[in-house]
Image (cartoon, rainbow, N blue to C red):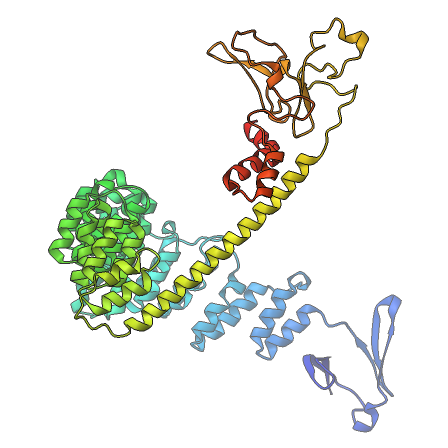
Length: 623
């Protein structure tokens, strides 16, 4: 009877893990259902009971399971189980089991599968790795190991890596390049591999190479030269291959001096990277020398100069750049002229005149001050009356407008365009008067009607604005008169804003006070002061009374009166009775003139309104 041990995978699937053949006395099918398993757990004893049988059972150990895998030629399962349960194996070695599995694969010529399992079998055993490298090389399948060879822990002998590289060189050059690029040069002898690669190139006639294979070998050589510090040969190969890696190599190893004479070749590989390289190494090579080397590539010269200009460098080459733009990129010349201000305008005009670049000449003539010639080019050369109008509008010169009118009246379409767009800057009557009598201008009548309507609207707006201004003035004037009619109260507690003494003195106080018989001036703002305190000395030795409020206007008076023969009499000044000085506004007189119907000077009224309503604002400005 065969006793099998099954492990369930799911509800309907089982895996056979081991089996055993048992000799039994009663082995018919009818008695099989009577067998059952029993045990003595504490004694670790298991047995199988039947009608007439008592069979001792033992737990299936890791060794038993591996042996069963080996007996049934399940070498892969045996190797996997042995590697997973190394600690449980007592009599079997996982390495031996793995070697049996690899040997069976090599006998079956299944080298790819054997190479994939090398890591599981060999692990960190250097000798075992080298043994299988030799086995694969002996079978001429060493390339199968390229992906699996360890580069450290363990690191094999250089011959192991070299045999893979040589095989790749002769059979798979692209793989050879990838291995050279990825592997550390310490793993193999760089000089030997370089010589082998050179021989492969030399003997290409014997064993022809495809284009991709040849490029792969040349790239491998360039990297091998870098490993050997033969930078000149490496750069030569990179440039020959038009490989952008050359810029990384130059930057990494600081090799600009080796390529400064091959700038044209670098430009052919990548213009932007070459310009960046030149900018970063500006001190190594003068700009003039670089431009000389790029003489046969004017667009590359422009690209290099533009990069310099963006870094605010190379101003001495701006005139040279203008010539390059004129020759090679004329559509970009005008934007460059507008963007750049530091160049010789006379040379730029000469260049544009030779090339007959009218728009550029107009701009340059405008910058140089020769606006009349620029206007003549716009009108007579280009026939662009709209551009001529814009040009005159930008410069806002009456002589330019007159010249434009004289030039425009020769053509009907120019007259219509000028009347339609320049009405705000030129009087349309001046244009109409200069139109020849016999000239037929289609649409002139409708345009004149439109102009007249626009003028009518403008006059109405001005009239409405005048009415609003007059209404505001009348309102302010009425308010001014109302305020002038208001009385001002002065009490005994009110002080002079200059000397801080009460303006009204009681009898017992007035006897010994210098302001006892002094007049008082009351300002429109409500402040009051002694007349004596408002006099200020002038440079001519005279004293003049200050008519503005010292407090509101921030004046610094000290209440000291400078005596002078020409001092104005105090009786002539404004007093508390409400009499006005010569500079004050006589509201009663104004009212009488208004009643008589006399004309009032509106300017004088506004002046008094300003002096009345805006003293505080003026004070803040003075401060």
